[in-house]
Length: 195
Image 1 (cartoon, rainbow, N blue to C red):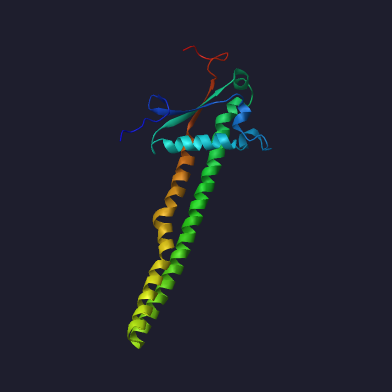
Image 2: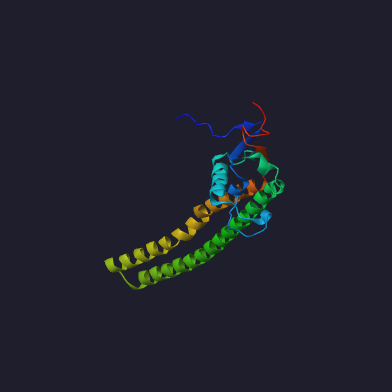
């Protein structure tokens, strides 16, 4: 099966994640009363940036390019946009890292509980084997062993597999938080470079 090319232009060794905005305020949650630099991003803008980053190779360099109308580029808020984006995604990355730490803490607790339950099942199986014979004893011994090992399935899943998506999410958010952000005039608008 042929590899599909990524839908992002390249500029030198950087991929470009581009957003064409009709107004600068489209980038931010307009209901957030925080100062501009600390304002939340609009959900659609956040989703687009995260999705685009997830599509890129894990260690690929990229930059975010916002195409804005000339009047928004000239506004006093425009120079604060890169800091606002970085601030927002640093906060999101710290939240993702917190969720990862909580997941690993829960996995450790689940593993301790599962290990204790397995030990009890093994003790029960040994006790039954030393006191009873026959089909019922075999059923109880084998059932206890199976039950004990099944109890470890979820903790092992949490340690082996379930933490990876959380780690990837934190990594992608850190990548966005450190990416270069450029503001350029919207194509065809006043001040746009002629192609």
